[in-house]
View 1: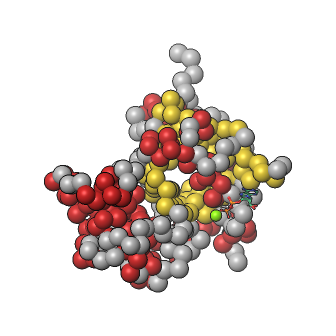
View 2 (view 1 turned 90 degrees about the vertical axis):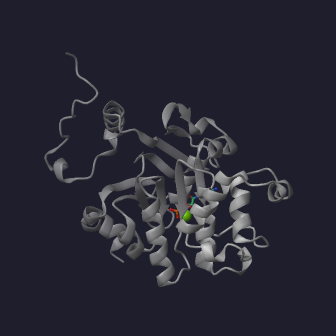
Length: 283
Ligand code: ADP
Ligand code: MG
């Protein structure tokens, strides 16, 4: 039989067994996952982006398994936001591909709107809830998505929709605040509401940029619990600076540095990787 896509590549050098998976193995990992029917949900391959000649991302590959909770860390300017911008279609890469679910959905060829409709939800750093509406109405608006405030709030919800909002409010811990005006919520509660609003749209992949910035310690813990409880059902990519928080939620971490993937692996290994300590954790 000829070599199958699952045939392991020979180690490139003697130390490679101890090192995180080299990025050149991305294609093998994709082939392995496809063959094993444990589908990757999102795969970024060899993505490069430059702004006026400045290379913000160089050959970045990132594979997310369905239901995974991945943390993306790295110093300021490493390219974390640029990577999220490419996934959501806000920025067009110079080269590389981003697939969602299968090879027919190359996100680098789609508009932001088409990408959102395919199931990529993004939570920005600053909450963008409808301040003047209640928590419940915010969820309702998100659930009905894009039909306009007036039409949405005067249309009846089906029993299934009410159940769904109730479930989301339970998940984000805001059931007791359902009738409260969103503008009056604490900072952490607004962040949870926005995560809830994303959930109402049933995203396949949730991109979450710095969720705990400005949160109290208790809010941070609650956010960690929330993200952990969503993993499994949802695939989540979290960009976060707070290393205590990252340690509390992450199983697997990808480290970006100067637009390249510096390391990728379990948090326990990443923390001890001398290159990561030098550029990021050592300070
Ligand atoms: P991070 O989110 O990891 O802090 P960014 O992705 O925001 O990093 O930025 C990566 C690099 O690309 C930075 O040096 C930043 O200045 C640059 N950059 C990001 N967006 C633009 C842009 N629209 N135009 C020019 N340079 C940009
Ligand atoms: Mg950023």
